[in-house]
Figure 1 (cartoon, rainbow, N blue to C red):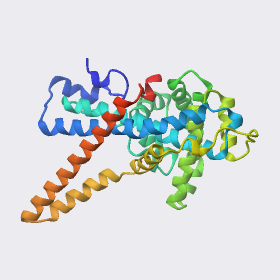
Figure 2: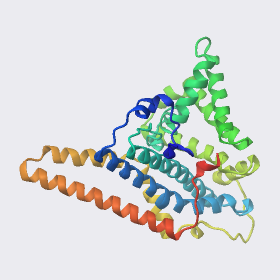
Figure 3: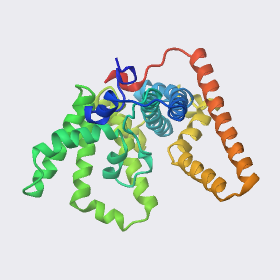
Figure 4: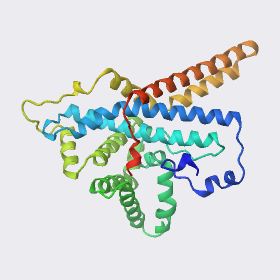
Length: 326
């Protein structure tokens, strides 16, 4: 009845928690850290993911002949943030709940949108799934022998990774799309990218990931291809269209987009390190005041996130996590 892990969330192997199943230690600092982690995940889901879900769903469900280039890009950007903050938020909540009871679940995300290659992206996205496929499928298929064997194994792994999400051609194409780019990077693209500015590598990775998300989100392959045509500016819209970007950009969505972009960057760990360094370098009374101020600030932010998330949860309708459908 390990309820933090009953539904979904980090794929926890027996070896990860075997010792803690036999002997656990629950302490106030660990319980407090679990609460902090749970609140952060709660905020990711309610403040960011749910806010950008409305424009993402509305645009992807809009008539394709009404889809403009601006709408198409807004829809895929919103979905890119929605799926990350929805699923990483769920993972944070599961990890936090487990921490409260003395269990240490593995991390599932490591700021994947700062990756500078698709290979690096899969080291940061849904880590527990990618490592599970690596250990139980990729390695058993064999990694010795001709290089084409490794490339074939990668395509097989990501073909099955797509099917794992659903028995649909859109998921299969999503998986093979990622698998193909992993193969292309091994064939030389990765070495070429390493000689280019980091900004260019980052843009390349985000473009590949967002194009792949179109297949992941679309209801059909034909719909995904038409959506991509609209993103590229090749899709002619019908006269007298009823949809435009301004319909979906209200203050809540703009704020959620801004928070989503900032939250995709490792700002919180950097801020915590900065706080700890300032307190550590201070002396005497100044150190005590700075430490108290840092703790008070962190507590105030957590309370603010929790109250805002609870209010949004109470005022909104039922919004299940995206990964509950898989």
